[in-house]
Amino acid sequence: MSGTIGSNILSHSGTVAETAAGLNWVSTVVTASTVTVEAGNGYWINTTSNACTITLPASAEAGDNIVIVDFARTWGTNSVTLDSNGLNFQGNADTYTVEYTTSGQSVNLIYSDATKGWIPLEDDVVADEPVAPPTQRGMFAYGITASVVSLKNLVNSSGVIASDVSGVGTARYGLAAASYGTDKAIFAYGTTGSKVSLKNLANNSGVIAADVTGVGTARVALAAAAYGTDKAIFAYGNGSGNTNISNLVNNSGTVASDVTGVGTARQQLAAAGYGTDKALFGYGDNSSGLSSLKNLVSNLGVVASDVTGVGTARQYIAAAGYGGDKALFAYGAVGSALEVSLKNLVSNLGVIAADVTGVGTARLQLAACSYGGDKAVFAYGNQDGSDTDAVSVKNLVNSSGVVAADVTGVGTARRFLAAAGYSISA
Image 1 (tube, one colour):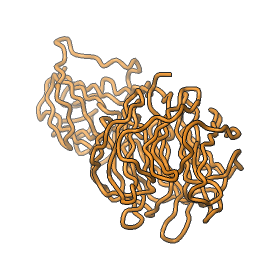
Image 2: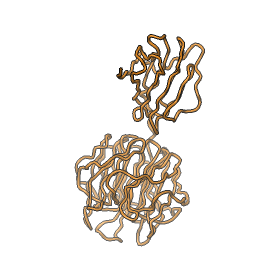
Image 3: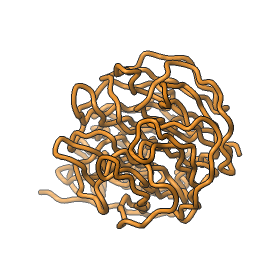
Image 4: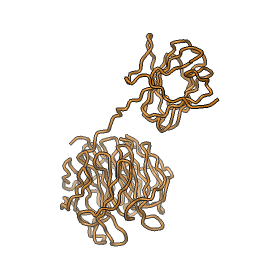
């Protein structure tokens, strides 16, 4: 006999009941793919890395109680399956499949008798998932003028770019940056003339720390974005050639080792967060020429396969989040010395819209970041195809994705730099 038992919600209170004698909560979070549970206990089940099969006791008495809870809100990605271990479950033999696949779910099981067996007293879903506070400030750093620099320029919550501050660490260009830990930033990789895998962490006051030797393949012209509310991912770029390598960054700023990516290896692309906890990489230069490809990144940092994008294929583009859950790609070049001021908005589902003619100076090798909770700023870059013709122009983006006219920026004009949001304090 086979089949699937669906959810049987008997209560919508969101409160998990406990037996008269109380419930013992097991302090160790379950992360294994299998676990055997005991009556009288509550269990935190974390399926971030894998699905989990939970084996119920082989014998039970009326009133026995077990509670299981989705610890990391990941059952929708990696499910939980219950093995009733020879006893019935809602009147069905244990040959039936009992699977829970909803993120944020908790299941309160009570044993009745040999006929009905284990019965879910409640299998509620906590719909009120916390939302990370928005990024209020940003930072542009590093790049190249007539020489390679480690300058930084902070951006306040109103989009005002401050004057130069001498940065810390190795001056370089062609690097990438992203927010992590909800209120900090990380700058990593790039080239000094030779490709490096250095990282520099920036705290929630905008102070850039000294060099730390990075992990993974040294490369240039890659991209980075935040995902999962407090983590980041660096991906693609050029090492000994175009790559599709990715490196995840945890909420402490630790860069993980290389993971072979999915999709077309390319460089000179951009990335941004969308949908509050996901990210996407788009555009760039692959071995066959320019592309408008996109690759979505899940809230677990998994990079999806190629999706043909919408809009003009281009390189040396920039991207940032806006509106709290959306993103936009803008500017770039469609060929040598062919800069554009196009923009492409991205919905909170990761759908890239058609070209919209941008406002301001067409340029490439610029950078962008979020600020003010729901806005973005694009700044600096290179125009007219000259390696020395860098600008300090900025263009603010409002919460509806409208790009404003040029404003002369503050600080040293430069190109091939990086930017990221930091700080949740305005």
